[in-house]
Image (cartoon, rainbow, N blue to C red; front, side):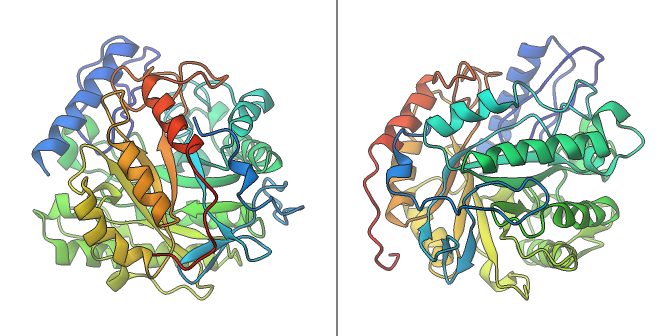
Length: 418
C-alpha cells in the first residue's frame, strides 16, 4: 500500500490504501489521510489481530539466528519446492501484519517510526500469535541521501531498523523488509507525486538508488534467515505504458529504459543479482504487476536465482481487479503450485471482514502465508484497513474479523498443497 507525502510543513502522516494516486491539497493530518485513501480507492475501482494460539501448531522458532543484522530467535525460513520451510524442514505458514511508518516518517522529517517500536509494542504483537511482520522501508533514508534530515537517515535509520528486526526475531517472528518508497521522477501520478525524491510510490524501483539499497540491506542481514527481502512494494509499469502487459512484464524483469518511465528502472533480475552478490541467501519476495495484484506473468518472467530461494508476493484488497475466488483460482493457484506465494498485504477498506473472511479461508486451504494491512492506529479503520485502536492490540471491527479468522484456524495437515 502506498502512503503519500505531505506537501506542507505540518505533521501529516498520510496513509491511503494501495496504489499511487494524486494526493489532495495539504489539510490537517487526519483529513489528509482520509482524502488520499478515498482517491486511491476510486481510481482502483475505475481501473479495474492475529489469533491467539498460532504457535500451538506453527513450527517452533529455530534456537538461533546467524545474521549479524538483527540476529535473534526468529523463525528461520527457506524455499523448498513450492513451500516455505523451517531450518528443520517443517512447512512454515506465516500469518502476520504490516507495520507501516518507516517508509514515510523519515522522509517527512518526523522521525523513523510512526508509533512505538520498543519491546512492549513488539510483545503485544507476539502475544497475539503473530509470527511475521512486514516493515516498509525508504531507500533515501536507508542510503542517507542529502534531502533527508540526517537525524533520521543513514547510519541512524539503519541502526533503528536493525534494532527493530532484532526485537522481532527475538520474539520469534520473521521480519520482512520491503522497499516501499524510491527515487525517480514520474509525472503519471500527478504533479504532486512527480518528485524525483522517495516521497511516494513509483511504478518501478530506480536503478541509481535501489541497487545500492539492496546491496546494503543484504550485507546487513546476510546469514539471518529470519529476515525476508521484499524487493519492491507494488510495481505498476503497465500503468505507465498504456496497459501494455508484454512490455510491462519485460520491464518488470529486465528494467532499463521502460516505456513511460523517464528514469532508468531496476528490474527484478538486477535486484536479485544485487542481493546475491553480497552472499546473502535470504528468501526474496517479488510482487507482480498492478500493484502486486497481478501474477499472471510471474512464472514466465521469474528471475534466475542461484540460491533457488524466491517467493511470489501478492496483494489482495476488495478494491483490486482480482478480488473474487474465481480469479484467485484462475490466476493465483497456478503460481502457488510452482513457488511459495506470500500475500504480503490483504485487507478491505470498509472496516468489515466480508472480503478477508473468504480470502483467508481460501489462502488457508492452500497453506499460503498472508499478512494483514496494517498494525497501526492512525486510521482507526475509519478510512482504510487499520487493524487496531491501540498498540496494546485492541482491534477495530476489521481487526476483530481478522483475529476471528485466525482463531478459527485448525492445524494444517502436512499433505501436499492443493
